[in-house]
Length: 427
Image (cartoon, rainbow, N blue to C red; front, top):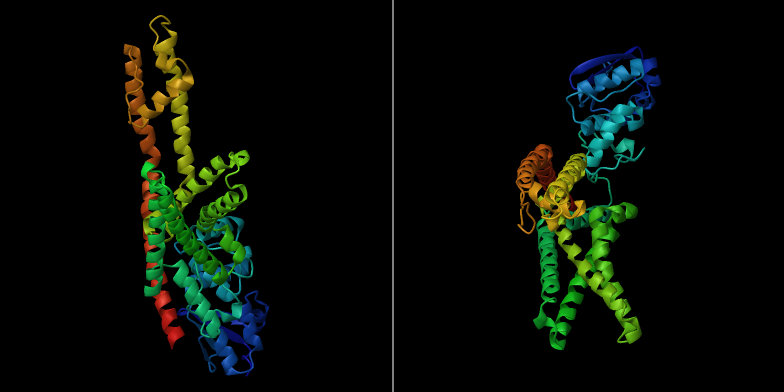
């Protein structure tokens, strides 16, 4: 079967576009150019949703406004993101028609990359959503791509294992596994805190502590190894922040055990004792591992990532005010009257401590001004601290609410897709 000559009608989302057969073949859109090479009707229906032979009309169940922007790109040679449309959704439309991110203008490419990084998506040329010919009309771009019905059962099993380990809300098994992991984290933290108590210095108690610690580290090590084995991209797995934290928390245990075996009770190597204590206390990083299972900690991390400019601005405000008020406090409390000077303000660095606890309204009371001018300066310092700290907090608060809403929607969407994947795997 050959596509008819003359004018071809493309019906995209109910909106018709007319193209000549020659122009259709010269289009840089790979999906449309392949229409000319179709021989059978089944091949044609793999590229479009329906075809009317009498009117030579092709039907595509896609976003009509996005395709209109793509047509403008064909006419003017510049492609922009569609206003009032999600960048990732428009990018998915581009992939469907055969375009890539490099076809966008540089400003729009930056917008797309920023949006993708916020959703933890890595856009690689030619590998954004997999092979182009497997893209269907209703696919969506997400943090993790769904498995197609043509994939082998082994691929489905790996995907199900990956979701079970990475997404605690994806299934009942994932929830049980996450609960066990959280339990081991809590036990490890309790044992770490209890080991610093004086009553835990006996030999019997230390032996029990070592056994429990070994069991917890064994669970964490096995979990990391399994997650590493079933991961798609091993390099990406190692570069993730949470996985780096896992490695930083696991490695000190094995290093400390190795150092203990090598040194033993040798008095000449007692300096390693400080190193061992530092390595053991690094296990406190396991608390951050709870971010894998709790939405609140994930929201906090994503908020800090998005609001790093506001955080830097907040630090700049504090440092500038600290420099000004500490210099004035040292002058008023110490330098003007050397005989009755306040020794707590003997230097500007010493006055910085008073400024920071005053600006944050903590006020320990260990350092305080005694002169009238110093007390007036203290009042101004407190009021200025409240104002300066409140300015960036508003932006951080709104970003936190937005991040929390996005992560909740993503978690619900991930759980729904995981249930459909499980049903497909069983059937």
